[in-house]
Image (tube, rainbow, N blue to C red; front, side, top):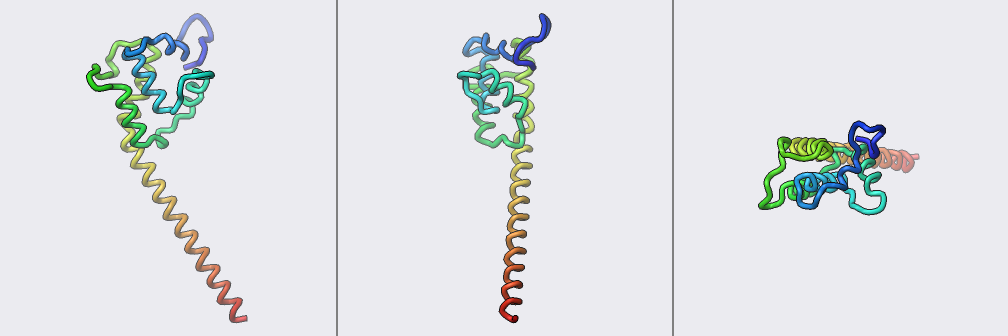
Length: 143
């Protein structure tokens, strides 16, 4: 979604600033802000646009998922679903949020496995380097 409308048709990201606090659409935006770690302020729409374009599901952790769920569906509020009534811009954003919530646990597991594999490879490389250094030191001592 473009930050600004290119012609008289279509939608733009700035439409989110018209959502009233407490509405379903506003809760969706708050949840997206949590996911992409953007706060309102100067350059907010550009920051949000950039963060959305660079969003990586594998960078989401459990704390972010929990906060996102809480902002999307606070206690006592009607749960947000893809069928909830909201402006088109919010419908696009809620699609992202719901996909993240659905696949987030699997992404967290995958990211954890990748990190463990990288740590194992790093440990193996360090062990090989230490063995090579010990062998070189032993060869130098014999000479």
